[in-house]
Image 1: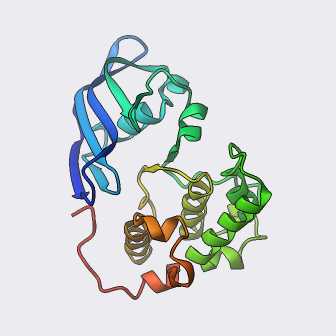
Image 2: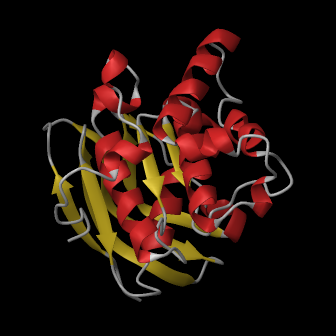
Length: 234
């Protein structure tokens, strides 16, 4: 058994949107996978989990998003607070409605649906009307112009980078307060990896991904031209 390392890459605000306190995770009632894991995510910040394969990174994320039960896992100790509310007993649907959404590893787009249909599934839990959803869809296309070009294409026939943009865009369509990204770089070319991390870093700025910056919104292509800095995983 091992545990992942936690790295806080940015701390733009002090209030925590997520607080994980000393959790333990057991599979099949006997296999201890995580022990004593604690971390906090500041509001407006980015936190990275680092570790070798099998260190428990994915299990930690699934514990936060309450997806463990699908794999016969459970949290046996500790607590998880999201936006000030203890949530480990809530369903994944409840967490999505509260604004916590996980982007699973392996670019799990719905391969038989078009790119745009995939994006719209992200708004399934919303009740704020078609106009608001249409406006957010346009924002996603502003961030990812390539998705606009491929909006009618079957997602399963798009490139790995396009599928990763699609699942991140789908998460944004739910209007999340926090996104859990599991292995967003897996299987992608180094250039695409760097571009996606740069975009994630800039999406973390509130004005950018909530679309309240008006005509100053940046697109995926714009982000590629920002001065290169150390990756947030460094």
